[in-house]
Length: 350
Image 1 (cartoon, rainbow, N blue to C red):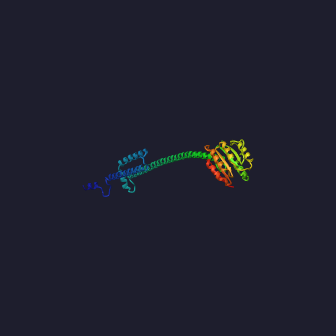
Image 2: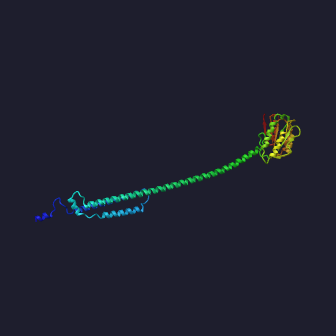
Image 3: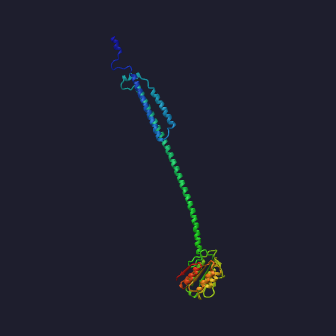
């Protein structure tokens, strides 16, 4: 009885019959905890990708995660069988890892590799998603920039067209004004413009008192004739106290180059002499029914001539411009004649 008890009882510190069960439970718990930790890391990584990229993971990532989760669940649910022989070998050789511990380490290494692979793929997918989003944003910005440039260019061209149209209108108006100014200056005598007059008669004093200044008057008269434009006609009459001296052919002629040259020759032949009597020359000028008459005088003449010429011109619309040349003795009458016949008066000093 004593021997039987001694044989069946385990010595203190000897091998325990159910130690393998405890080791199995411990390994199962460790695998399960690692699996839970791995799943938590995977879930965290997926959430980060969703927040970073703004989109769901790709189909490849989903397949990898599902496969890995399934694998982990299988691994966690099937813990390795307890190795009783390994336990006995480790007890015999305390410094050598048991077969179970080696299997457990391989499992941990496998989980580490799988986790690193998943994290790498997730990071790669996140980078690809971020680059794709960035490229889309850049393309959108470039498109918007091109559209803005096109719009600005179109607006600029429209504004340019509008400005060009306005400028063309201004050029037209300016050309019209220039033409009117040129027309009004055409035939101007001593600064008095002819305006829109088409028929002009120059009546010039050639009396003895004009001897020293007649040359200057001739030059101004020829200059005025040279500015006459096509479509205008003119005539020149010199007067003294006798009958007027008219430019051949004694009437209005067109302001052609040939007629102008003939007028210059006629003017050059005129010499000073006699007294001052403009009335007969003005009567002859009114006979031609001109639009404007230029009268140049340096002396007095009867006031009755002013009244008669004004009466004769009434209702005919001929403007009579008067030029008082270097002698104010006849200024009053010349002013009156111009004022009574819609004309302009000027005084020319020495």
